[in-house]
Length: 419
Image 1 (cartoon, rainbow, N blue to C red):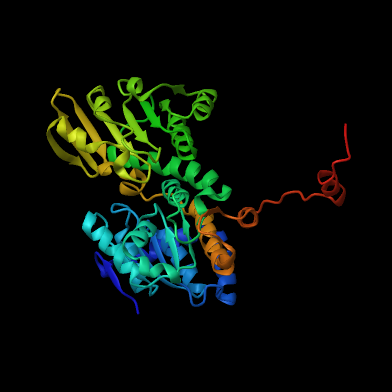
Image 2: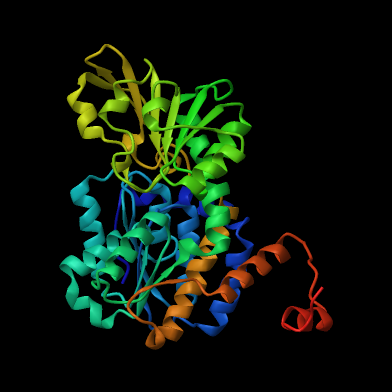
């Protein structure tokens, strides 16, 4: 039975066209779908997925269904849902979906609860809200859950914390930690789509601006690279010395946020941590500074304390809120501090999500087949899955690589050979 709560089911036809457009550059997932449709490795699985409801997610849900799973989808971010896609997931593909762009906090969690009415045997998360809700309020579901997957850095951090405290009750595969995910999705996907979202929301010129990137993990590297490529002067703030050194060696200025806040024209937080930009930073910013976030949750920006220093605010453009401070300066916050690449743009290109969601599909298959051997902790995607996804991607691009000869394999496995 297909259940739903979407904005407007009549948008389904438009959503289907966009889903088909994304599918044209998702050859790895298409290859997996072909096998899944024949083998049905997910037959009998009930899968609850809390993901960004985008065209790429729709295609992942289709592939999981082709593999035999009963799927229900809800949003992992209130501003990332594409309403026409949500409608198409339900009407065109017969998959339960609960997601409305701009839904409030109460509706967001109500949609998670509706998804859990499926009584899942496998969970798929992007930020760990689904898993944490199960562990807090739906403990009765845990005995039937074989395991789950997690899409993003923030969720992996939360889940590893749960595992360290001994409260994680079933195994999770960290899709985010696969090389074919974080090296491509986080760097190239986040880099391009974040700058795209900022430009769409503001129509400001990047070239010549001072662009502050908070955090130099894989996502931060991607944002810095794309902003620099558009002519911005990039400043990086970091707390981890190796990453800070790497940013210096990559040619960027590195300094504390307390110094960068007075220089930046555009800010983007990409850390996964809380209150990266705080009241003392807002108060030092230039008049007209633009502030955004590309980390999973909007807590990276301390918007509550910004409100305390604000004498008036208004929405001046779609996804642009103007805060006029008590010192007379104006600060512009994009997309309510939520993921700007999904709030104001369309998220990662489908060719990038092809690899990320291939990890989700094959990771789910791995959990189903191996759950009895897995402990209640967070696992990295097995290397053989990572390599297979890379192989399929290269094949789809028409690229061929070398293979080791028998002599080379023997040499690499021997300890006797010296100089």
